[in-house]
Length: 470
Image (cartoon, rainbow, N blue to C red; front, side, top):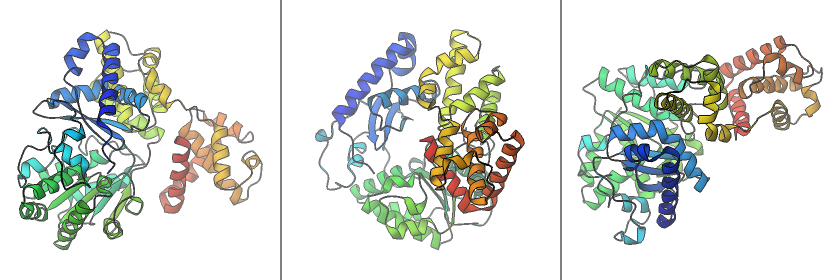
């Protein structure tokens, strides 16, 4: 886990973000929804804010979540996300680290701070309901849109949730931010509790696991902690990368993992990287995390983004032109969370201001998001990247040569051009030496077939795509 950011600087950033929010949203909206928003802490690339209730939290995330992230990135480009959490008590603001009591648990500096703020941990260790995180009722299998980038992870999650035996242990899901890991984790928990109500399920973040362990140490009640976590039927840990570098927490998690798997209890883990690539984790732990099934959720393609938006449009029951949905699917390509946030902003603006949703209106309302996503990736850039990756001459992208060492990278470049740009098939064909659109269609079909049958090919393509989308 990253060290706690300097509190004074963080508080200053928050003050500037609030000023800009107030200016952009207006006094009425600010006092209605944003005034109660308070700063909690920063952990690595994520800033955490607090709202007094789940209702207010959901409203803020829906209408202002993406703008909060954008404004904070203007203060600090290293910030990847701004998370808003609900609490039953109002936080009094961020307390400087030097005002906190000293602790011999120096390796967990963030825990020392959180344990001093009652809204984070207010129940004694051993309380099952307090330890399990609340499940978002939106995150079910029914509401998860399946496409090629996430179909393996979805199928694996369903198998774990519905099976009366343990199909693989652990199930390890990994992906970048906002691609659906937490959705699938919640969906599994919901389904298990519905189908097997007698099973004892704990679902929580790796940070929460760490907080509870450190708190048990402080209360000198580690026996209760161990008994609780090692007696569950299903343990689900979200974002396990956050215990990287935390030796005492890793040690406890290692023994908990061994005890559960040894007793044939299901373990489900999520992270932002595969087990072998997780930084700061002991080798023995990385090895065990890879024992079962490791399933990645790849970056969304255009077709999946379009399906997600179409599904969300049905939920909000608002008339949105097809060209607007297609435009958003092309332009907001970073992650699903940002895509949904863009749609929510458009719908909210239309509802509050009374404007019809048009392409021009969307471009104006989402100007900041579109600018951030508008890297203007071109076919030429894709051709250069693919040629460099496969160590071939760029001129072979346009040549008539058909040797497989030339033809396959050319097909990959066509496939990426179709998925990462807005060019039509004939336009793509012309960029590859005047080829017909049917040639491009064949290339796309061939690459899809290879992705489905050849894991190394699929992994290579994923690397290329991530390089182009940086």
